[in-house]
Length: 441
Image (tube, rainbow, N blue to C red):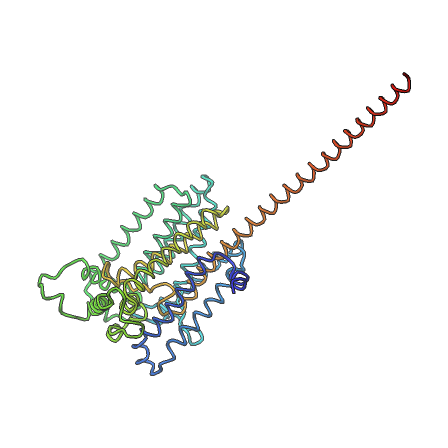
């Protein structure tokens, strides 16, 4: 069994373990939390079969990614980014709306989310930039270009999901900082973006909300989402003056309150898989609040802490992989995709336990999704590909060292033979001289 795993699961075993455990938790909790989907579709098996199908497809995508050379990944990043820009613009005008924003495209009966492709592609492009910007001259000339690429990509995603755009921008900035881009450049750029975004949201929030609702223009409606963002922040930070208000469930706080009840009900060891009560009251129990259901069913010990540990374990392992890599592009890309997974996970978990405002971020590889599962599996494929490449390089170095030692051993053996022959010749010569002296005497 161990030989089978070693032979077939190429790459770092810890990363594999984290991936497989997350998949197991995902299948179990999706089956349990899909009550709302079952009532909507009328089928008990359809939601879980769909989820398992995407996980299997994600595993295939992960294996394919592991076989793709990093040189080709570097090139595909630029191609994917260009394609995602076009798809994001198209989605803005002709996409399928969800939660008041156009986010999806219908492709062959499935809904495709272009922002996931944009996230993956941008991380590759930023990693390529940090690899090239070790040259100060190149960094000075190219930084405005790549900063513009990040800004445009995040701006297009911003129209459909503010939190996703913010996470992607933050991860891109961290990758640049780790990749030795001067902090002053990053700080000036980030400050300008924050001021601009704040100005846009402020202006949009001043206009009466009714004007957005009555408009048929999708671009106008997009700015109307500023009210949603402001309301979520206010609901989290601004306490109601009425002390009884927190006990009243409204449309605005329904999901947050039921998520808190779920976490409190779970206790240390949970109510058991499949026994969740709050899944019947959380419309997004299978997605935006699945962590609350995990804690309710599996408890804080075997659910909440275990999931946190898996993501933290992945982060530390990826850091080790990056340190071992002799390629800047590969190291920064591993850090980028890992941060994308881990930061999104912690934001999701923070929302579920009411440590932050509602963002709508799914729990990577666990929450229900199609495109997001596939892209997260590609992230894992990139990490595993890097670990596999490092292992091959280490193996080659060891072979060279072993070969060198063998050659040195062979050289020493030859020298010993020569010395032995010379010593034998001296002994023979000495013996002949003794015999000659005896004959003379």
